[in-house]
Length: 389
Ligand code: FAS
Ligand code: PHB
Image 1 (cartoon, rainbow, N blue to C red):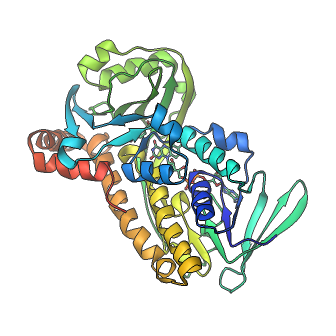
Image 2: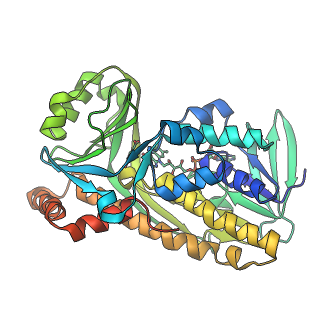
């Protein structure tokens, strides 16, 4: 088989890129190792920057988001059970959309299928070849048969554990990493959200987050030690701990119910540079990971897609290679702003094992400064709603 762009990974970045390339008349094939139903069942992000909203609409995947998503003009932060609001709209003129990544991925698959896209799932042993030549190709095995895709470019949209980043020689690749000494225990419950906006809670017992998916589907997280397992947290223990950490008024009205999903995710900050080697471009989690405290992971994947799609479009339609030559530089500039913000929010809101009483007081002072200073709230708000592409 021959195509112009071979995309490894059928998550949100891979399918969004394929759809945008299609709209520009550029041919692509998506190779996804998991069965489609597995990909479409993943529960991950919940908050979309407005740039992401506009990209999904541009790709033709925004109708259900506009009908079912929640537009939020602000969020709450709290320290020791007392909350205050960050007014995104008043401070920046911008808002965010709360709409689950599960739905985003489903909408992208739907629009890509409708536009005749080739998303090949259960593609095993995907292996790029000749990335530093003029004629790269990708091999994979499906139903026991080895296949080959000849292409002009390879987009590595295959996430943190994918094959693409590993295909860049160690002599070229530079990585930067910070692993946090705790994880997030997440629960999904068919209950009304604790509040009409999100609540990010700092508490001496640890971080908590109240989020949502719709009027009867809530998403909650509490910080837990790295050695905890899901079975250490029966539902009642989770609800009791969440109530201890969030603002008193939200704790009083919290509606609890059985968890329909419960999982623990580790937290790390990670960046791989460069995001391009020869004919390979790294996109999304294949190149970078952020702790979810800043709601940036999915949104960064989308901004990478923006830069790469623009670069490939100029290459094929205008014979202009500046976009692909500067892809890594442009994408990384925005990646590092989000890495910094996600690290800052994580450092501000979580209980670190070695921080001591002084560290807790400094966090509470920083939160008090945010509450009193419009300038401080504006800085947080403009990063949260998303810096320009
Ligand atoms: P993805 O990992 O989504 O997709 C990569 C795809 O490539 C997958 O479908 C995988 O099966 C496939 N693949 C991997 N290796 C392959 C190979 N060798 N061959 C073929 N295919 C291969 N972000 C937020 O903003 N907020 C959150 O709350 C949040 N929570 C998260 C919770 C968890 C448990 C995880 C893992 C991530 C979370 N994220 C969150 C980040 C997440 O949303 C990512 O940023 C987002 O999925 C990035 O999209 P992709 O880059 O497409 O990578
Ligand atoms: C979520 O709804 O899953 C969510 C929201 C905001 C975050 C992280 C996760 O910062």
